[in-house]
Image 1 (cartoon, rainbow, N blue to C red):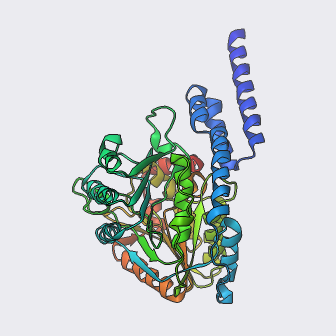
Image 2: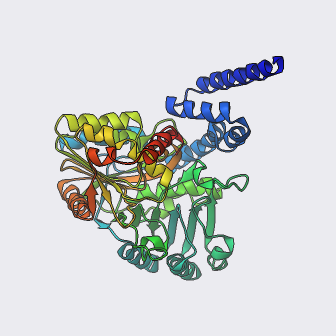
Image 3: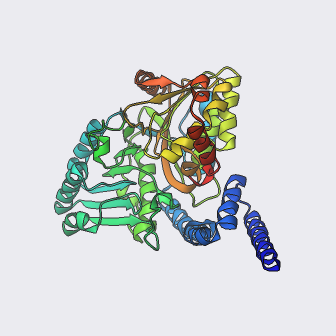
Length: 468
């Protein structure tokens, strides 16, 4: 009996010590509680996970990445800051500028793509036209037909003397060194972003990933959005329909900001590279005004999260958002609810089925609270919805790589384009309304009628929302 009490006392001291240590880290309450559960009650599993992917490891990487970011900022953050804008959008502009050194820039052309076939055709045409350089960064790169075709184009340009740099996330990219060997042999460069120290079965949940999808061609044409390099985006996988996604092509001065985002991650993933100035030719002002926002775990400030929060909180007419994952933190949840309470038309479009059952379960746990506040939710299907967009009133359209989830806001490197003006907002709104024809509304009655098992799964998944 005495031995049992000693074991219990040691366990309590361990949990108390872990809780005190994590509390002093001053992380978000949700993340702190989740780590207390994992480390306090599952130490055999939790301690190795914490040492590999926990905040301490993240802090060391932040220091290294932050140094690189400051070096690049001094070299290439020389963007136009004097663009005139209507008074009703200046609030968002100032926020983006102060959060992310993201001054307003312009684009001569912008084009939205809502299917992989047309987006990759435009990207292929851009690569074929390259004369100086092609910079490509992506989370997923699959060794399938889409990946092989893109690799052939990149290798051909490298053989022609074009500087080709390809950066893939080490966790997301399923293509390996053998697959990329022809590009390297042709003179191109391939780097993997932040490989884990050890092979792990739960690689999907390893933090500090680049979730950005960026292409920069000759410094004057750029792409960003939600589309990875995969057949899932174009012809579907295993007989399923292709994913519904959104990508943006732009030409003009705003490409400089995309170039900066790429070079930051290239320096981190591949070591010293191009200074950047020789790859940033000047562009004449264009008619489209926008800001390129970057976000990542290298800083305590989360620019995309704060930008979207402010946009929702200041909305007067509508907030229409499409997201593959809906796992909001409390501030964003409050912003969505309060917007609906004051009469703003708040609509959320989410997948009927996603690529992660556990994340989808966590997302459903937020539905009832949002619906009771007046937010309307639709589930898109049968194709998987992977787009990340938002329309606010008639003045702001956002297209990017990040979802409305904690991982995108705090743990991944993401990028977004905030486009100002009625034309872009109305165009993206029309796409949103068209997507609703392939979706069904979520009702509180349907949620309440679900069996107990799925509802328990939703509630359990929500407890780990800050780690998903």
